[in-house]
Image (cartoon, rainbow, N blue to C red):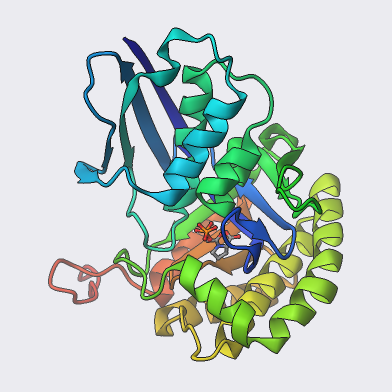
Length: 330
Ligand code: 2P0
């Protein structure tokens, strides 16, 4: 019997992936760029057991059995086995895969990214594969390839039709910018209204704006953002991050029928960030929103305490009845 366990964190895109040129292989229409959270935060954990005793393959996600008959899982498994040494005795043993997330699944918090990054890392370890396997994680869920590396990661869309050069590359390790912090404001942890997979397909089919974004906006943004990260220029990094999030949600609006992910609380957070930055006469906080209403804030450690006070003032924590705390009497 062989057992491997891996952990992989979520990544939060500052330049978003939205739209595929190949649905099966999961090849994106634009490059994207993200920060991978540290290992002690929002993570997926996967344990794979390979055993000659197992009669069939089994897959459990967050304590619930899933069908193993899943095209994405099959594609990843097939690709890993294809490059593995064929003389490995356990190559054809059945597998038991158990995966869990320590945060809400499918709520727009990059759960599939961490999940597939973790699973492919575990499979690569099981079958003793060395070298980059981010292109295999990509076949499970596009954004998963970015969680294969820590720190700041670029997913290059690539140009080959088999997707072999559509891979992730680290552009700077986390230690390059140790003051950087991420705050996740969970506005709603329910399963999202429309899956990213379906929504981005609809965007490709219906949004004219998407072509402009992919061909003319994103390439400039990626270049400028990499430069800002390399120089640790938070002012520029924050401006690009916020503009990019807004550009992505504009595409969602331009999709027909539209995919509306942001809600009133999301807009309150956007307004609070702009008001705070204006008050500070500099960009001290940057928001970004994925396919859901939850806000992710990038900020430097020196701004964390003050900005959390601002958020607690603007959106006071609710008690168990859903009422806002009124504050303690003086
Ligand atoms: C991103 N998102 O770059 C963007 C921003 C959501 C909004 O990557 O179809 O779950 O599995 O490749 O990876 C979500 O897309 O979609 C995503 P599939 P995935 O983080």
